[in-house]
Image 1 (cartoon, rainbow, N blue to C red):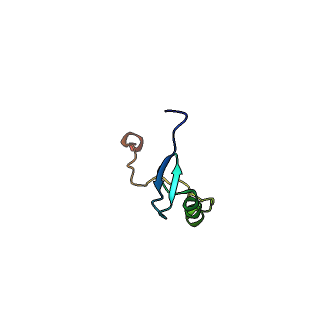
Image 2 (image 1 turned 45 degrees about the horizontal axis):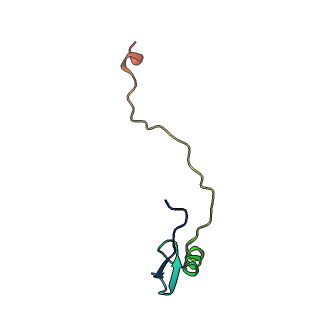
Length: 65
């Protein structure tokens, strides 16, 4: 990949403003608004302890008397 890529001139797909950027997508103003509107808060999720299923049949040799 070329280290010095030219900037593209295009219209922002979200607001329609003329933008010059390396990659196609929303302008920086729209990106900031999207991050503020859709960014989630990190939280700890508690996961229950693993319980093996009880439908396993015991070994016949071990149950033989």
